[in-house]
Image (cartoon, rainbow, N blue to C red; front, side, top):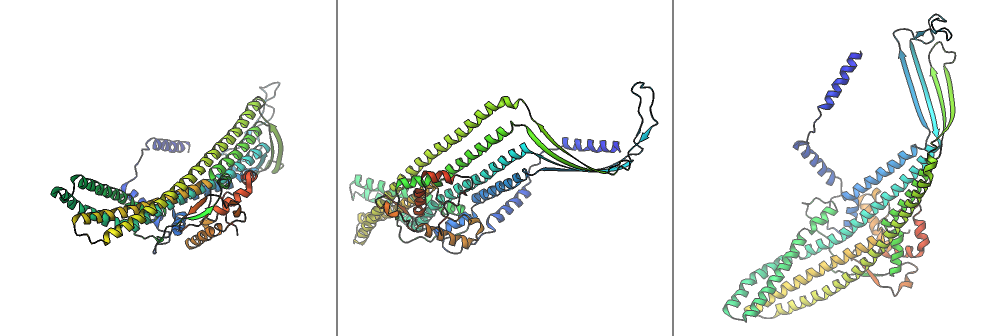
Length: 546
């Protein structure tokens, strides 16, 4: 039997030494890729109608793969929290055994005074076949304390995971804004830009003919050709950017990249003002920004780490209870139980206490400094985003004015009865300029929406209810519209900001900022600290009022 066991162990050892890496085969990779594609696009609502901005938000939050990754990471953190709770329970260890001997366990003893003299004949007091079982229950007070603080830390990590998911969602919505309006400009202007490029390229030979025949001044002809080529270059550069805009949007909302789709683009682009003072924005950002809230939870984790470090320096007290059973027929009692209370620890831990305590204080102070530094960075980001939004809004209004002037100019030139080549060239140049101005208007609007997204992200506003992952697609879309409509209701204190600068939202996005900022202003600095309490759910702060 022993020989067989040794041979088996030797075979296993030799097998382990012969292990070599095996690269995945092409067939396995193809099967894996097909499975990934089926999972990526196989469980989502088909898009059979023009896509609105609201629906783009909803589809991204429901189907975006990065969002799904964060959702599963949050679920894993919750599982870790559930597992950490079991560390608080007493340890239970069960042991059962059955032993068998091929002869009796007999023995004899010698006298102490005369070791050469045997005191008794050999005897045995155990059966050849014996079964034993015992259950050990132990509970260490020190381990319980450490496990308790470790569970609290894991609970804070769950909340950190929620804040990280909020950041992913806010970044995702920010990217959706910009991609949607870039794709909208592509859908609206691609055909017109292509026609303008075609007309401009067709006008170049006529311009060169004017130069060679001397119908105009050579300098004027060359300047016109250069201006025409510059416009073509601008249009081609914009066309190249717009060509991939729908692909970028499809990737964000997890549509198959080869699926054609259209956007529901509003006929007019407008900016709806919402009045809010920069002070209220600051209060809202300090209250809701996920980066700051994440560091608040990190501070709580540091505090609990201090508690754990100090507890480990204390002696441990262990309570144990051990019921036993033994089938040995020679025993008087086959069932018995033992209990004990033990205390023990390292005296050298007393020497570590000053350093451990000082390190814990420094760790907590470092956590405070990190949060303060992040708060400063968030406030700076808020002011920059706000200024960028104001600049982008001004640029959009200016681009709108230029586009309207270029369009009217083109209409005037087109309606003239021009019979010479110069007049035809002027008409084409005006058309190209009008299309370029309209493109710049859409691009300015897309930048305005991107700046608004950055402002929302700096404020830390969640435009959705916290249970979005439990809704179906239609319910999610309705919930998004409801949340935005609720948040667009004026707050009771809105009149106090009548002279505040205006913030705008897009044509398809009502002002989410108003009610959240009002809540932040009413909260004040004391509410900021209270919101960071471990019992406050991160997403509940921005939940719309019912």
